[in-house]
Image (spheres, rainbow over the protein chains, first blue to last red):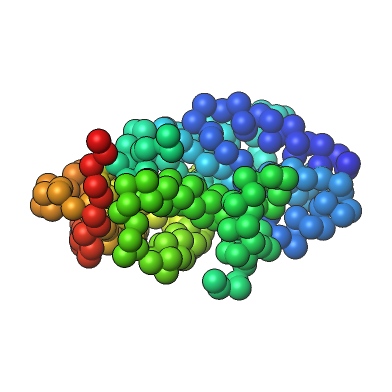
Length: 113
Length: 184
């Protein structure tokens, strides 16, 4: 795995630790992902590009039972910590949102007996 | 079923259906790591539970497979990422939520109301204001005005608790009544 791929894996792990993050999704489009798997041997969810020593990071997350803006802001801060690069450009995309309350749909609540 | 692929997964709705039917094993990262696929799979879970319950109560008669396919198709449409809606930004940090995520939030909130199955969701977000239109089915026996009011309240709470948005209009259309027999 390349240095960027290893870094992306570490960023993935750090993002998962942020309260309110329920899921991580692939941030890069399919062709870019396939290229990274083939060339960089990286299957990380977060996309990291390095240009002239500066990182450009995109993370795609699902947020559950928390405010999306608060969680996404915390994710961006955590990413910069892991990168040890306060000036890194970070995009956090909230791709799924789940409400704070548990589902109680009477149509689907019953389990088969 | 449509042959177009779902999200960035490279898999079709039919592929997802087969994946769902085999219990999502072996795991396919391209599916599990795609938010649109996950929304569709969650919807298949919900509809699967619904159909089992209706079969148990002999209430499934009159329900057509096309109805389930229609709802799955709606979920696939709604969960498309769409535009990135800004949640905040400074010079080097950009925080966005996808339109698909907002539609999914609204659908989940509507489905959470007892006796309701959301059929279609439309959401418009402009300059921090969220307007919503839902079409729902209701189980026979629930007061329709009360159900609509509860759906509006759930959707309002879900949106306002998820980000600093202003909730605009929430239009609820009830287009079908479904029968469900009481269990003994």
